[in-house]
Length: 479
Image 1: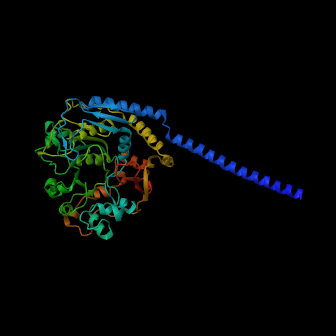
Image 2: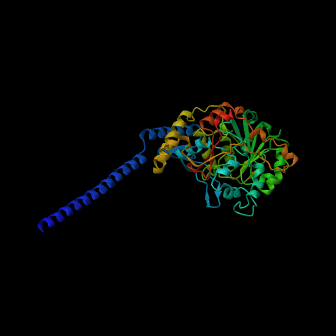
Image 3: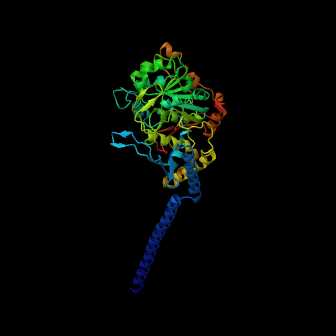
């Protein structure tokens, strides 16, 4: 009996030991997991001193640029990413915001890190709505296409054939315009300040010129705004006047800012000009209006973007235009501050009669090398704040691609419906949509190769991590 009892005790002891070992193993694994997890999180959230240094130096350079070029504005640094642009004392804030019942403030806070990421990314994007985008985007035809068609009678494209009939005339198969397609471009706003300086010849010297809505181009204003016309961004209200405004300029490309509409459809039937829908971002802060969208459009095609007609004297109460009587417009001080920020980020170059010296001296603007370093540091900083972003580190320039797809290996149709009028049949779409790869300037071809034949689109809003990316056919076939 004693032997049997001792055997039972022995088995019980072994069982207890096994249980203890199991509990210890679980505990050890938990501790190790917690340790490595904490280390990983610490690794994710620790800011690299060299990145802070690079961004701080960049902020100082931006501050100096604003001091030199800001027309009285000053930049006040908060930290390595944030700064405040302030207007000088004595600035008369007369712009009243009826919605919030306040006058426009005299200072604006900006996150320079986010701005650098946004606009450097925007240089690589396409800004025209295409068939490949709708094909690749989840529910692109059902949901998104319906958002771009006015008077559809439904909030979704349940009848895809009907939606295609609305869009085909302005829907290319793939992007008709390429990043870096042009070297230097001019975006001409409509400010009355244009009448104070004769910029006409200078504007016309650019590789491409972008204009807005009904802005007239004729001999009356030629010495102020030039006569070259390549792209025009238009809203619905401009459609009824567009035939008169174009005045026989058959090659000027129209980019519709909002949605297709009956007014546009009727107007398009009467002109041979190429017409597309704008596919851009929604800036919730900063400058607003068609002028800002024209800058976005130009930046997606051009290396250098010069802007004219975007500055006005502070303190005014109405938006002056060079071709018509003043009217209510957008917040002037906020827009001027944001444009100044963009210039000191190397995004645009401002030309204004408010600057007495018209010398092309951009030495105070941060160099492209400095901007590239700041962009890389801001990108690491952004990803260090998101544990899941570690998975994207190996994707490099495609780290923000949320949706991937492949383009149809066939070229696809040129924009236009089968029942086009004789006028529409003479449209010069093929100049853009069937442009041979080898006919692009070298910088555009190099960029295409660098991007591995991938077109990038913004999906929604101004988020940095929501790109739709579409792979095209092998590069060899493009040469």
